[in-house]
Amino acid sequence: MSADSNAYYELLGVRDEADVFLATWHTGGPWTETHQHGGPPSALLTREIETTALPEGFAISRLTIDILGPIPVGQVEVAASVLRSGRAVHLAEAVLTDVDSDRAVAQARAWAVPDAPGPAVNDMAPTSTPDDGAAYPAPRGWVRGYIDSIDWRWVRGQVGVPGPGTVWMRPHLPLLEDEPLSPLQRVLTCVDSGSGISAELDIREWDFRNTDLTVHVVRPPEGEWLCVDAVTTAAGAGMGVCRATVSDARGIVAFSAQSLLIRPRTL
Image 1 (cartoon, rainbow, N blue to C red):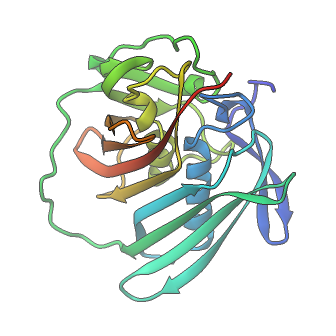
Image 2: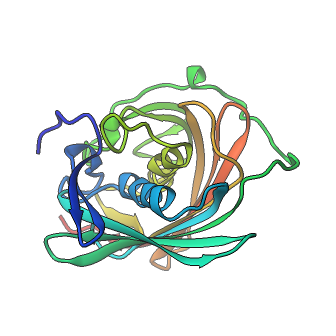
């Protein structure tokens, strides 16, 4: 598949009231170029909720993505609906479907609250900036695509090197050409990388894909750059958890958690 596209997706049209998209090469990896990285589809689900199922004056405070199966680098459709609407809280859902198999491959549920001023508590600014970080080439075993769509500036750790990691991230691409990423879409594009940023296992020997992603939002981020500070914990039971703190230059914007399914890799 060509890397010439200027976005993660191309909008193809509408089918049965769902938006249909073609995933581009940039969504692929890190396990195989035929399946999408979790970041772009998570952001696409977020976009559908923001544009079709979020009332004016509300902001998403918590978003949970469940990955139901491999998400193909191909045609997918997305539809959103409102599950509960009220003056204080709002609950919406979006479903991502593989067009070829007509099978749901991911779903998102978002709680939203009125977007109103409030106090700042424990709003700690990061101790680094993108200028403090270093860029490294992708290591062996990591499939390109999504990795090449991000500007990485490593402050602690390095992809492919076991241990916790801290990295400033900036997507080069929007979800759709000529449509800028919203602040929350930018978070979702980046934060699913937490399990890779803090990978404790060799991707050539172990499969440690996340089955879900939950993001608790403190406030919308400002600017292009996001700092993801991530750590993975596993205790030998075939499962693990990755936790991450997401910041912009001003301070913390979100916290995330990913459940990991850990298995020996068969190539």
